[in-house]
Image (cartoon, rainbow, N blue to C red; front, top):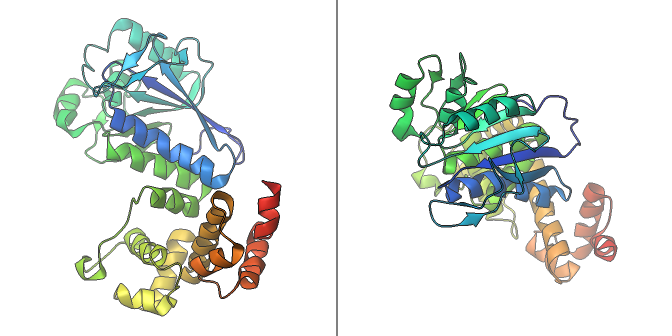
Length: 317
């Protein structure tokens, strides 16, 4: 995935979410909740989003959820990303006014992303000519026949530079995780995924015999998360996954740029920070829950990572 053009690494990325009648609430939640979680975990506004419509009239999802747009697409000044979310009745929504509005928005938004049936509207507006895209698989063959100038792809998520697309539902979640990882690194991507239990792996006995690097790292991280209070040696994690410690080290460095030991410590310290900020547990209790022998050991590691002790952090809040 590419960063939005000219967006500084530490800037807040702006996202417009263009809704249509009968949009999928599942797809909407899967697109927005990862951004909310990234902001929460980073403790700063990495992303800001607004709900848009072609007008400001209230739109109702296919499951009956009403959403009132904060602005109309025509009045919105633009931003880094525009997410299109039509679901049902998408062909009826591809009228001349809609297509003109999308062509005008192309000049104001750095990247367009078609979620669910969003690629249909982008293609109808002539914005996908000679580009790669996907959409809900039930309509993929029809899409390919209707728009032969578009390279219709069966992948769950398609990245074609400043045009992104996915099939809706859970694939919207995957697309947003990819963006978060591209913008802010694989550790934040893992942390966001973990909040929603995405990527949790079955018991080692049920794992397929050969895992990709990403899958193996996700499986190892799942084991680490389930063993925060009593941390396992890295060798024990490797044995559970039927790989050597050296192979596990190599795969972690390939995927995360750091070894499994450093990743394990970061997971434990992040868990400790959440407990410091979100509970009234004593520092000693937090130390025990996060695998440290006492409060002093936690405080030293905490200060080295976050620049403050747990008590100092609580006093700031």
